Length: 231
Image (cartoon, rainbow, N blue to C red; front, top):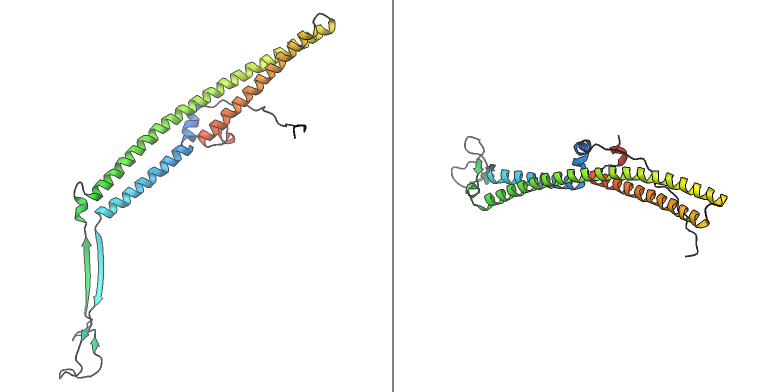
């Protein structure tokens, strides 16, 4: 409804902070979402390479044991008791079985250029490339933090200057209004002084918004709240 009044509450007033770039980088750079994601991918790749290497070059130990049943003819002359036709012991009462131990090697994995060898080398290349990417991203993130802090400091200086302009514009408006009451200034001069005051106040609000936006961007970059950063 266009006729309904809209009431907006709140304020852009906020405390300002000066941060040390080296401290923020050392404490919070590793918490960056981008760097955390890449480091996690690096961990997954390294684990996969380790498992693949162990599988390719580690021999497999095979243990086995089997019982061998012996079949007898119960009606044979040398078989005194015509009972069980299956027997698992020899004449000395020892079980008939086979115990095996074996080591299995995949010899083709040791051949340069084999499928598994190429696969492992490709994984090593991916890990090396990802490490370089992480280093480059870390440097870019450091520069981004430094630039954001520089913008915040510039915003603080501009905010202070704008507040001084508000004080000057307010005094100018008060003096013009007094002069108008005395008849030495006309109404147009009062309106002009009032507009200058409103313009100065608007610039303060605009710079406060710029500073708050910079704080939010810094929080996102470091993945850390402002309450944690100012501790």
